[in-house]
Image 1: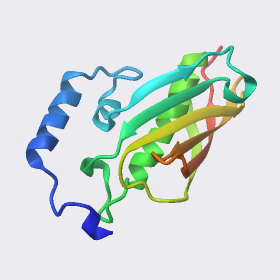
Image 2 (image 1 turned 135 degrees about the horizontal axis):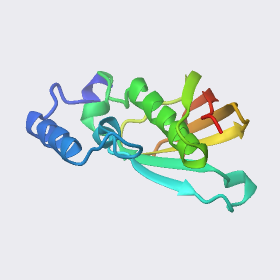
Image 3 (image 1 turned 30 degrees about the horizontal axis):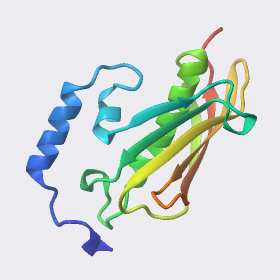
Amino acid sequence: MAGDSPSRIDEAAARAHVDAALAGHAQDFETFFFARFLGLSFDYLPHDAPDTEKDCCRLTFEVTDMVKNPQGSLHGGAMASAMDISMGHLVNKVAGPGATIEMKVQFMRPVTEGTVTVEGRFTRRGRTMSFMESRLTGPDGKLAALATATWKMPPS
Protein backbone atom coordinates (compact mmCIF):
# COMPACT_ATOMS: atom_id res chain seq x y z
CA MET A 1 0.00 0.00 0.00
CA ALA A 2 2.95 2.31 0.27
CA GLY A 3 2.74 2.38 -3.53
CA ASP A 4 -0.74 3.92 -3.33
CA SER A 5 0.68 7.28 -2.23
CA PRO A 6 3.08 9.53 -4.08
CA SER A 7 6.57 9.76 -2.63
CA ARG A 8 5.99 13.50 -2.18
CA ILE A 9 2.95 15.74 -1.98
CA ASP A 10 2.43 18.07 -4.94
CA GLU A 11 3.83 21.25 -3.36
CA ALA A 12 1.99 23.64 -5.69
CA ALA A 13 -1.33 21.89 -5.00
CA ALA A 14 -0.63 21.91 -1.25
CA ARG A 15 0.16 25.65 -1.27
CA ALA A 16 -2.99 26.38 -3.30
CA HIS A 17 -5.05 24.26 -0.89
CA VAL A 18 -3.65 26.01 2.20
CA ASP A 19 -4.10 29.43 0.56
CA ALA A 20 -7.75 28.60 -0.22
CA ALA A 21 -8.33 27.41 3.37
CA LEU A 22 -6.74 30.61 4.71
CA ALA A 23 -8.76 32.83 2.40
CA GLY A 24 -12.08 31.19 3.31
CA HIS A 25 -11.68 30.70 7.04
CA ALA A 26 -13.06 32.49 10.08
CA GLN A 27 -12.53 31.14 13.58
CA ASP A 28 -16.16 30.10 13.95
CA PHE A 29 -18.21 26.94 13.63
CA GLU A 30 -18.08 25.45 10.11
CA THR A 31 -15.51 27.98 8.88
CA PHE A 32 -12.50 27.52 11.20
CA PHE A 33 -9.19 26.89 9.47
CA PHE A 34 -8.86 23.15 10.13
CA ALA A 35 -12.39 22.50 8.82
CA ARG A 36 -11.48 24.47 5.68
CA PHE A 37 -8.16 22.60 5.40
CA LEU A 38 -9.96 19.23 5.55
CA GLY A 39 -12.51 20.54 3.04
CA LEU A 40 -15.49 19.74 5.27
CA SER A 41 -19.02 20.35 3.99
CA PHE A 42 -21.68 20.54 6.71
CA ASP A 43 -25.32 19.44 6.66
CA TYR A 44 -27.76 19.17 9.57
CA LEU A 45 -30.79 16.92 9.58
CA PRO A 46 -33.82 18.83 10.82
CA HIS A 47 -35.22 18.30 14.31
CA ASP A 48 -38.48 17.03 12.78
CA ALA A 49 -36.71 14.18 10.94
CA PRO A 50 -37.71 10.59 11.77
CA ASP A 51 -36.37 9.46 15.17
CA THR A 52 -33.63 7.36 13.56
CA GLU A 53 -32.23 10.47 11.87
CA LYS A 54 -33.02 13.11 14.48
CA ASP A 55 -30.31 15.60 15.44
CA CYS A 56 -27.54 14.61 13.05
CA CYS A 57 -24.58 16.59 11.77
CA ARG A 58 -23.35 15.14 8.49
CA LEU A 59 -19.92 16.08 7.14
CA THR A 60 -18.39 15.11 3.83
CA PHE A 61 -14.87 15.58 2.52
CA GLU A 62 -12.53 14.20 -0.11
CA VAL A 63 -9.57 11.98 0.70
CA THR A 64 -6.54 13.83 -0.67
CA ASP A 65 -2.83 13.05 -0.54
CA MET A 66 -2.46 15.78 2.12
CA VAL A 67 -4.51 13.78 4.66
CA LYS A 68 -3.14 10.32 3.90
CA ASN A 69 -0.71 8.37 6.06
CA PRO A 70 2.46 6.78 4.60
CA GLN A 71 0.47 3.61 3.82
CA GLY A 72 -1.77 5.52 1.40
CA SER A 73 -4.97 5.64 3.44
CA LEU A 74 -6.80 8.42 5.26
CA HIS A 75 -4.84 9.23 8.43
CA GLY A 76 -6.53 8.11 11.66
CA GLY A 77 -6.00 11.56 13.17
CA ALA A 78 -7.90 13.17 10.30
CA MET A 79 -10.69 10.61 10.77
CA ALA A 80 -10.86 11.22 14.53
CA SER A 81 -10.82 14.99 14.05
CA ALA A 82 -13.68 14.88 11.55
CA MET A 83 -15.72 12.67 13.89
CA ASP A 84 -15.07 15.00 16.84
CA ILE A 85 -16.06 17.98 14.69
CA SER A 86 -19.33 16.29 13.65
CA MET A 87 -20.32 15.81 17.28
CA GLY A 88 -19.15 19.25 18.43
CA HIS A 89 -21.00 21.03 15.66
CA LEU A 90 -24.17 19.11 16.48
CA VAL A 91 -23.89 20.07 20.15
CA ASN A 92 -23.41 23.69 19.11
CA LYS A 93 -26.37 23.57 16.71
CA VAL A 94 -28.83 22.24 19.30
CA ALA A 95 -27.51 23.75 22.56
CA GLY A 96 -24.48 26.02 22.04
CA PRO A 97 -20.74 25.37 22.36
CA GLY A 98 -19.88 22.26 24.38
CA ALA A 99 -16.64 20.39 25.06
CA THR A 100 -15.37 16.88 24.46
CA ILE A 101 -14.74 15.16 27.80
CA GLU A 102 -13.52 11.90 26.32
CA MET A 103 -13.62 10.10 22.98
CA LYS A 104 -12.84 6.56 21.86
CA VAL A 105 -12.26 5.71 18.20
CA GLN A 106 -12.42 2.28 16.62
CA PHE A 107 -10.87 2.00 13.16
CA MET A 108 -12.46 -0.78 11.10
CA ARG A 109 -11.10 -0.40 7.56
CA PRO A 110 -8.91 1.94 5.55
CA VAL A 111 -10.27 4.57 3.20
CA THR A 112 -7.90 5.31 0.33
CA GLU A 113 -9.88 7.57 -1.99
CA GLY A 114 -13.20 9.25 -2.69
CA THR A 115 -15.70 11.10 -0.57
CA VAL A 116 -15.92 10.30 3.13
CA THR A 117 -19.18 10.81 5.05
CA VAL A 118 -19.21 11.42 8.79
CA GLU A 119 -22.41 11.49 10.87
CA GLY A 120 -22.48 12.68 14.47
CA ARG A 121 -25.52 11.91 16.66
CA PHE A 122 -26.62 11.93 20.27
CA THR A 123 -27.07 8.48 21.81
CA ARG A 124 -28.31 10.07 25.05
CA ARG A 125 -28.74 13.80 25.41
CA GLY A 126 -28.62 15.25 28.90
CA ARG A 127 -28.79 18.69 30.44
CA THR A 128 -25.16 18.86 31.61
CA MET A 129 -23.59 15.85 29.85
CA SER A 130 -24.42 13.93 26.69
CA PHE A 131 -23.27 10.71 25.10
CA MET A 132 -22.64 10.75 21.37
CA GLU A 133 -21.38 8.70 18.49
CA SER A 134 -19.97 9.49 15.09
CA ARG A 135 -19.73 7.08 12.16
CA LEU A 136 -17.30 7.54 9.29
CA THR A 137 -18.05 5.72 6.05
CA GLY A 138 -16.07 5.51 2.85
CA PRO A 139 -17.44 6.11 -0.65
CA ASP A 140 -18.65 2.48 -0.70
CA GLY A 141 -20.94 3.24 2.28
CA LYS A 142 -19.09 0.77 4.51
CA LEU A 143 -18.29 1.75 8.09
CA ALA A 144 -14.59 2.65 8.35
CA ALA A 145 -14.49 4.14 11.87
CA LEU A 146 -16.77 4.59 14.87
CA ALA A 147 -16.26 7.11 17.66
CA THR A 148 -18.13 7.25 20.95
CA ALA A 149 -17.79 10.26 23.19
CA THR A 150 -18.95 12.05 26.30
CA TRP A 151 -19.67 15.76 25.88
CA LYS A 152 -20.06 18.55 28.43
CA MET A 153 -23.12 20.49 27.44
CA PRO A 154 -23.16 24.29 27.58
CA PRO A 155 -24.84 25.95 30.56
CA SER A 156 -28.57 26.46 30.00
